[in-house]
Length: 264
Image: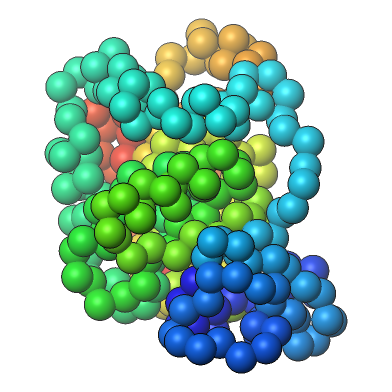
C-alpha cells in the first residue's frame, strides 16, 4: 500500500477521518500493520499490502457466493473468462475490450480505481501504461483479491489493492481521476447508491467507465433467481443520471455493453 494511496482514503466507519499507519513507515509503502482513523479511532488491518475494510463475513447465497470460492478465483483468468469471451462476445477479444476502456479513460488527472477488480486483470494492464497515477484495485471477495495480489506480483506491476464492499467507497471527496468497473454492475444490488459514491469520489470532469452483459428481457427472471441484478441500457443510463453522472455514452457489442459517464 503506497503512502500516496493511503492519503486519499477515509474511514468507512465514521466516514470522515483520515487513516494513518500505527508506528513509523520506513518507506513510501507499507506491507503490514494496522491503520487507524484519526477521527474515531477505528483500526483496519494491512497484510501483504492489502488494506481490509471488510474482515470476516458470510459469503453471499446462491451462485454469487460460489463466485467467491478460492477455486473460482484461481481458475478465472485461465479458464472462466476465456470461455465467456468465446461464448458471448463473438470475437470481441480481450485486447480489443481493453483498448476501448483505455480510450474512454483518457489521461486521468488522479488515481484510477478498478472497482470490482476481481483478479486484477485490467488493473495490471493499466499499471503498465505509465499514466503517472496510482492504480488501485478494489473488490469484496477475499479469494479474488488475494489472487489479484499474487498475479500482480508475478507480473511485477505496481497496483494497490483494497478490500471493501460497495456501495460505500473508502475514498475522500473528489480524489479519483477515473473509475473503471468491468462486468460487475450486475453483482451490485444498490447500483444507484454505488454510482452516487463513484460521483462523490471522482474529480470534476473525471470519467466513470463500466461494462456488462445486457441480456434479453425473457432471461431476467432466471438471472435474478441466481442472485444477479439484470439491468437494461435504459436502466443503466437512468441510474447514472440519478446519481449525478452526465454525458452518458455507450458502445454496444451484443450482448456486451460498454458505457461512460462523467462527473460534471
